[in-house]
Image (cartoon, rainbow, N blue to C red; front, top):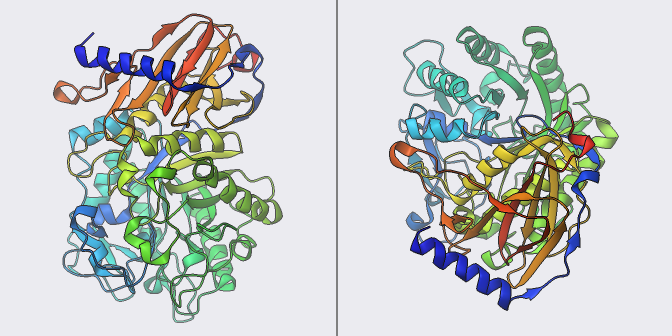
Length: 538
């Protein structure tokens, strides 16, 4: 054990001794009841269509000029303006100082592939509002500019790169179809010609479209490239065309809808009231037409980032562990649950886009502070009939799991890796959570009868603990410090080794009895001998 590891463990021990302590919660993993299941690819990620084609995406904070934004948007802002030779333009009405050009992502990068593969099985969502107005080239030699009515060009070579990456990392594609002005006839009705050619090309080259939405974030239809005056009635008309086309020509693809964002009855709703004169279409009006979809899809952002401070709806690093912040995902889901129950009763939920904050994430989105939100959200939504959660993004801007330039793992990636290795698909009830001790349980992956317990101590000062009748393996994540990009596993820094080898992910053996959790730590406990009958077949 190295000197730095010993020092960190000693610091944790001092913290346990000095901090206040909450009463230990007695737990009986053998009796945790089954309360649901999640998709085997529950934890998934986005690669924005704009990343694939190249274009103007959220500028890193260090490059942003200290001038107020003229207008604001969110992570799915559109390429409604004319494209330039350097890729899709910044969205119409948005301050161009918030964006900078990114070349197409290198999906053949060995490190990127290795790290994405370690999170598989997953879904790879290639969408974002830029996808609404992206034209799929009709020849191997693409034009420099897209046809009228489109905002960007997706080349054959770029899409083949997506297909190859998807297959290499065990992440079938989730997407949305082009639906902007250029896809429509003289009557304004959506036509499937562009989608037909694109999806047929995908199938012909070995790609799998696991699920598709008609429109990315139709609540913000005008911002997403829809025709002027586009409303819920037009959406319903077009969705029915999309539904009939997909059911006939791609019957194995799950259909998702409506794909809404914002609107939730909360002060942080990133779409409430629209942006300037761009009004919000209501999810309930949209969902009235999507009853034939296989799942209810929605997006959640608890705030907008500092890039879009002009629109309000801010949060701060000081609140990153607060009950209000961590609970916002529940309130958004509760809003959409009421819509789902009325118009799509019984359909499961897919959260097809989420992160710490819209507009590319906040500066602390790349630190250990955000790992609390990341894992707490996975735990909460698994308990509430959400089958898939797709994080935005894999490797772009401040909310990426990986650094977009180096593809080095950020703290959220390490949390994602532990979730993938330990949390199975059967969801259990570990009892109520409280401040300082959020508890989530699922069957332990690969161990019939075993239980994986996630214990999040979101208190910055108090120690929490549980009493367990079983031995376990402990995996505790901590920041060094909590607001840094350095994350520790059981006191040891997590980093890639030679040739990008993942480090050993070893648990520390814990005897039955009291298990303590230091302030501002996240702990997985692998309880292989729990003998929970709900997990007997896992």
